Length: 400
Ligand SMILES: *Cc1c(COP(=O)(O)O)cnc(C)c1O
Image (tube, rainbow, N blue to C red; front, side, top):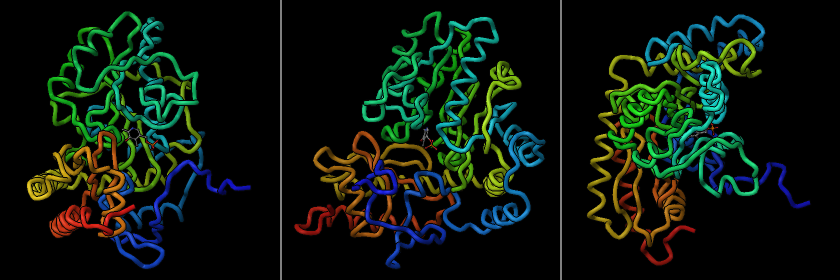
């Protein structure tokens, strides 16, 4: 037998983390890394944050799981707190981002069904999108690397280029339920929706009786310097999927909706055994205790500006490597020159300079630090990026 006990679906690198301390990860051999990947935008409070650790430990000792057969005092307070701080009137808790997207798709279809329009089942989605790996979520993207070999997929999705408002409007027909879109594309290459695009989708949804469904699994929860990325655009969605930062590393996701959009989600229409269990709710509460402190998001925005400014200053000094800076807040991307492979450069930064980043589509290196970084971490990352760009060209020094 040659298959590994861990199903070999991930091309894992040689870093084998065994401990985390704030913004650093420590590997099996004791080596330290500055973690500007943050578990792919998950570890919003870094590693081992005392408030999060304590909340999880205490809840684990008190009550971990009971199922959704019983009342949930823990879920009620967290849902209320999210409702109080967002567009939403109601929240369904999941264990992952893809499940939050699934719930969003189901909520959108069910809305039109409840309105007596069951034919309105199609969501207009966008090229290069990433919504997760369930069959529903891979049906909502056009990316062959996620879809090949899994057909037949779920019908009911149309794809147009991201930021192409006219293209999206042209696809509206009498079977359209709404739009499903990342406010800022993550895996696709850190492209922010243009204001006219996001606002135009909102306007079209209102005019045609459609739903605007946002996927803020990656860009929500403080990542862009506001609680939710759509706040930068002055609009609100009808339905929204969030996850990643919401649990700070504890598996948690949520589907948020207005009362109107959730009108079809009545008893028995949806469920999850683990979703919203007391342990997950304790993690979610601890994250909000920190994030909803006055000034937290402003600090993320300030640090995002500082990091962006420093990245922009790197470009002229290393213009053989870097092309441009993309993204919002602390969800930043460095687009590399076509001659430099983003995966290779990420490996080089990791192996030679102890800096963790993540590659994304369109040859972009994602820079996604914990939201609690300090200015000193920004300086350290910039030094490593600068040294990494310089050494990338030194014969024999390049990474794999
Ligand atoms: C990561 C991600 C998902 C999927 O989340 P999982 O927790 O991996 O299921 C969905 N949408 C976006 C935008 C993401 O970045």
